Length: 364
Image 1 (cartoon, rainbow, N blue to C red):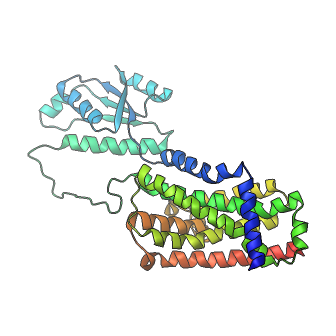
Image 2: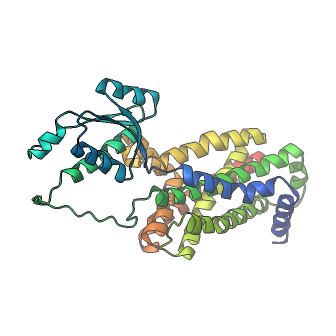
Image 3: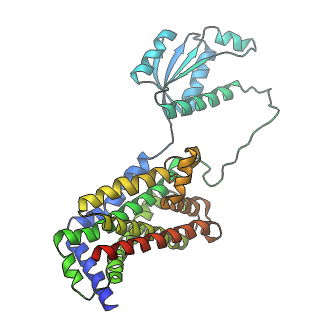
């Protein structure tokens, strides 16, 4: 234990004496959380709308007012002919074009349905699709009359995220990504840095065992990851107002196996690298980016090709994202999340065992 404690103290002193690394450890994660928390959103509002009103009646103007009053659209262009409607879409000043033909008001006054045309910019498929859905909702609301009742009335109920704010499920995923990046990157470069500066040979002639070096290298970065969670939680809860419906203690306990996975992957990367640059490249392009893309954090897993859906089962971040969203939004605990925790614990054990085997061979 004395030898292990000495390695721990050495690592903590190295962290404290490096004036450049402390801002990276504690300031950069908060900055990333703030930036990505606003940037990583799928909410689409204030869609640019171009109007071609060929009817110019009170009925057509009422319909345009419905679009503007909905809050989903922002009127950016008015044209006088349907031929000119393509220009604002080509120039990018409008994502959606609405044409109200002549005679629209007369058709509505006669009790017959009026026809309009919607043109969407397909170069931005996401915004175009959402814009068409919003416009359809506005038109359906405009079609409703006082003396008309549908045969089936739908009253949807949204659980866990009633306002359907994408920030509520994206920000916990960003928190998971930051924990993964910091712990994996730091642990990956820990042993490589010893080799580059020439202190690895000095450690090898000491009575330290491989276990002492591994634990002594990983525990300080586990502490750093824990501190980052505590510093990021106020931003998540009070700045972005993401609800924490579950237990914070449960969240921290379920974070342990995930952090062991990321630390073990970092240690494994350090045994595969000769320089810090190699370690950084391996960490970024081989281990981190695939996890981010295949974890379900950004892209739904069910929409991926079947072969990639099977690959996602090997991604630790996938299970931790489920844990975070379950604790934050659903308020569930061990009774529901124990399979994810068990899988992460199995990954952690296998990764650490492989990293320790590689580390012993490298020392030999």
